[in-house]
Length: 477
Image 1: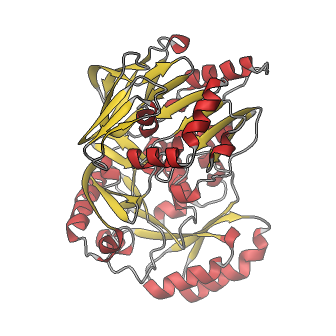
Image 2 (image 1 turned 60 degrees about the vertical axis):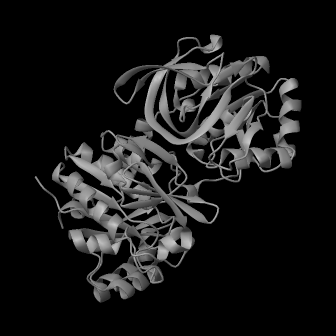
């Protein structure tokens, strides 16, 4: 059966579009419907990998909610902010870097044609497409908005607004959105993040129905969402715990979703360190991925992080580098691409050496760990990076890229340090358990229990939201 596409838009950024779409994907999948997510354009530094290349991590999670393999056609355009510029990824591949202001004011007709082509591909091969909008659809200052009403009107979707009632002004923002876009633009709305008695909302619901013929499809309570979030929703506050992990907050940090799992494990504390003193007492220090490796290496030196890292490393802290962080930990980087600075000394904690050649490497990868304390542990994840690195002491062996058999060495290790190109490395639960419990044992702590499964988290979220929305009306009205 073919269903009309459902388009979930928000009255603002952070209204909960991503969460609602993820839940609806699983709810309708559980009903036996062949459902697929779609987001025309996403702006995020949290990128993942699907069939075809690079895509927003949020759509990777939504694909999992649909029990589908992620595909770049689910997110045709990905924008990655970069110092006043925007790196544009189209169908998983780097397209160009453009001034952010010029991008927003351009008509982008060529990109819209790509979006329409990808939507048709997805729509033709599924029963139902759930589309997520971007920001607010009523940003009248944006002339060519690819991700909201321009697309909705072209494909004839059923449009539903999500509003964050916790931040206040929900009824006004719904009315304002409808007044700006037209009274027939939306069939209804979902109130999200509500605390209190729904009876308090009845007068408002009556007003919206009487004056705008808008139907309330549900009132979702405030939920502590356990899924990795979009950039704008990520909390940099961290939390306390018996084990302390410090992640350096680089100016161009990317893929912060790598560390979301720490927030869900009891007794594990973490923080994003903005200055070297915030690394004090860390049991493990992580240098994360970055959009600009060399510039952030300069930052680490200038701000005094390098001396602090070396000091704490000698005192027994573990040091981990992921992607760009791995490159920084090596002997040197030859940069004839990013800053064109030539040979630049790394932190020298690992023996790896990196050379940038301008080619971006993007793939889903899996293999086994070679480091003796994790020997032969299975590992899977994805890689997105410029540059190639070599080491005499690799961390792991990649045996598959997508579904292709390969033999490639990854990463580097030393006594208490490791570097890897594997994003999502900490979502390999056996590796994570061993990593955390080695620290716990050294500190004389009790065993750390890890019980995180992203599919179970999706299922729990969907089951909770299903109780508070009218899924049948959303699908069939």
